[in-house]
Image (tube, rainbow, N blue to C red):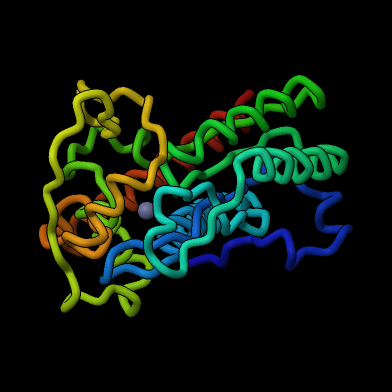
Length: 249
Ligand SMILES: [Zn+2]
């Protein structure tokens, strides 16, 4: 496989020769049950960015490892950054890179619905202020046609994807399923017609899940390498397609 092209490994002369497209992976450092590492969301975004970069030659910027995770603070190791801070950080990164000729920014979001609002706010401002294009690529939305398991947390999908990306970090002996009560108002599975996108991160549900299943929401026991490979390949293909479309403009 060709290597990913990382911005931090280039020189300024390399950047001068770039075509103007760049990927920024965004994730979180938060509890992912007893069987997945804290960095799962970031690793997922980075893994997709690296593969798309290797296949297309588009560089990836250093990732934003942290996300907005107040609802996961009930379990140790979680780091939450205020969304207004994250918004400013992403805005400044885009501002800097747009000054150096980048015009198309692909933000890969590994932290799902909770990261989207501040990415949207930063992107809208940056588009307006610098005349650039931003594309938010959210794996949960970009894969809903696959219909592979229900979206939750540290569930079948994330566990399968991590079996592809970081198999050595998946502790299979610690996998535990959970089935929390369905919420009346919030449903955050893009593949479901009930999806509301109105989820407000809160500790309460997670406190319950922490006690029940060590922070898992869903059925990680159904995870497999085969599901993970299908999911990963689908998402990378969509990223490559997006990059080809940008190049065709
Ligand atoms: Zn996650």
